[in-house]
Structure formats: C-alpha cells, structure tokens
Image 1 (spheres, rainbow over the protein chains, first blue to last red):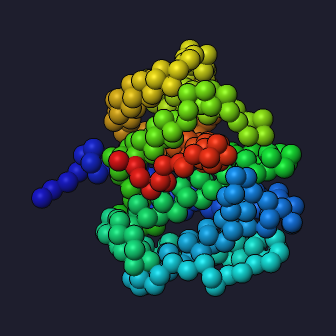
Image 2: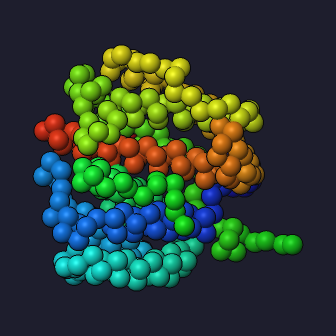
Length: 165
Length: 165
C-alpha cells in the first residue's frame, strides 16, 4: 500500500508540537480562571448544585499528567483524584504549574504512529491516543466555560477567552 | 533545509479528516444541547445576564460555515450575525443541519499547506488557518459548557458530554 501526503485521509491538520502549544495556551487561560476566583468561592461557590471550580481543577489535574504518563508507559492504572487534596488556591496553582512540566515531558515521548494506536486509558477509555488527548483539552474547555458562568454569577469579569500566553 | 517525519516540530498529531470528524461530533452534541432547551427558555433564559443559548447558537452558526467559505475563497468579509434571525428552535436546528454540509464542503478544500498559512479571517483575526479552525471548535465547546449550566439551572439533565455520534 502506498500513501501520499495529498490523500485527503492522511493530509496533516497540525503537528504534535502545535497541539502541545495549543493545549498549554488553554492551560494558561484555565490557570487565570482559577486565579480569578476569590479563595472562599473557589472551594465553595457553584450554580445549580454543580461542583465548585476547585473540584473541577482537581479533575483536570488528575487527568492530564497521569493520563499522558499512562499512555507513554502503557500502564492502565485507574483514574484517581483522591491523591491531591488542595485546601488553598495556592496549592492548586502550584500543582498546576508542576503539571505543566509533566505534560511537556510525557507528551513529547508520544510518536506520530502511537497517536493513531488504540489505548485503554485508565483501563476504561479505549480510543486512539490522539482522541484521548483531544478529550482532555475539550473537557478542560467545557468545565472552564462552566467556570466563566460561576465568575459572572459572582460579578467577576472572567479573563479574555482568546488570551492564552 | 531538510526535514524528516520524525522531527518533533513536524510529526503529525492528526489528519484533517480526523479533525473534521471530531468537529462534526462536537456539532452533533451541540445540536442535542440546543434541542434539550424548552422553546421559550432557549430564547429567553440565561444566568448572570449572559446571552440566552439561542444567541450563542446563532453566533456558532455565523462563524463556522462563513469562516470556512472566507478561508477557501480568500475573502475577508466581516463577521456578521445579522443575516440569520431565528424565532423557533426548529429554525435553528434546520440551519444547523444545513451548515453541517457547508462545513464539509469548504473544509475539504483546504490543503495541508494552507492550514499552515496565515489568513486575516473576517478581515480581523490574522492567524494560521489551523489555529482559526481550532478556535471555532474551542469557542463552541466553551459556549456549550455555558449552556450546560443553563440546563442544570432549569433542572434539565444535559446530554452526555462524550456522546458525539
């Protein structure tokens, strides 16, 4: 079988380096959203019985780094958000910044071929690796959109959506 | 200058066909979110003075197809959401489905090389084409996350985030 770069099915949309930069830009914005909450409201405020933004941040932290580690090491350790129990905004921001490096470290070890292979992430989500990674980012944008409503409900102007770096 | 497929800067994350499938999956989910709103609340309900979900849907409809048309035709017509003024949920869903085909039509005309070229979208947003396209999807996920909070506030269970097709 031969393929060419111009076959619609295989032409590149973006490189892995571009995806990583895009993701870290989103993570910078999410960091600003975390930081925009007053300490108390970060841990306590919510709308319609949904989770406070601190809980959503813990979810995001519990996915990205551990998932990439699982993918590169081919381990299927279960998803777990019990290992990180922050009590202050500072705890969350510090861990957020540490995970930035963890993400870069593991992401850069994933080859082009591996992106297309199926992997049973957390022993539970069997998809091509690139789809799992897109899911992490989409999930972050989704929950952050929720955070924007919390901030507006608190009378706080959220950060600009387009400001990433 | 020589490059190889294994250079980190150029290795593929995903193909254009995969990105389009991913986007249309998100659009299916957004369609379900539109449909989950009662007619009246779709046009009137909001939280914290933000726009009702019908207005957000009109924004999404005014971006995707027109933007891709602008990119493929290299026209820099300004962004405009005045041309579509739906008064019923059915109006929005019908237009949504029409735009599905418009998106497929124009997206498939964008070459791998073009994805990397700068374009001044709507005469206003000068970025590489792939970044503009990612922005459309991110913006949709962001506003849809806002819609999830509206639905929860209305006591309505939103569609599953992971259900796309």
